[in-house]
Amino acid sequence: MKLQIRLLGLLIVLFSHINVNAQTQKNGLTWYTDINKAQEQSAKTKKPIFGFFTGSDWCGWCHKLEHDVIDKPEFQAWAKKNVILLELDFPRTKQLPEELVKQNNSLQQFFKVQGYPTVWIFNMEKNATVNSFNILPLGSLGYPRAEAGKEVYTFLETANGILKSKETPKKS
Image (cartoon, rainbow, N blue to C red):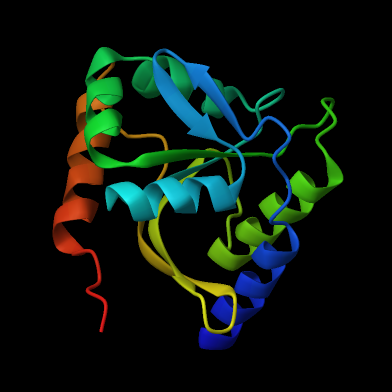
């Protein structure tokens, strides 16, 4: 696993100049697309990263997760307080910059994402000595199984469980 983490760290360093649409605003939330920018905010705020793996232009379940969870005020308040949002998009018709495609593919492989939507909550630590990152996965979520209209509550309950069960690692 450490080899994978270091390899991913090296790949991330290679993509450190993505900056094309590095962040967007949706429903009052800031969504990053550049892992480096998300990591900077995560380090500043001491909040983990919420990586949303999506197929923005083709994935019906991704749209459903956005509609039933992410677009809800409860999620928005929770996200502002608890996480840094990172969108990792895998569109079929929309063209992304090559650096962003490589970054997203590297993270997809690291987390072994096989279906969409998938959310990974994780911490990243920068190792300035070797100019790489270590990724510390906390847990993953998908579309919540819940009674219609209660999806946001089930999703947030699971996300809070992940945050509570996995303390932010302390620096040694």
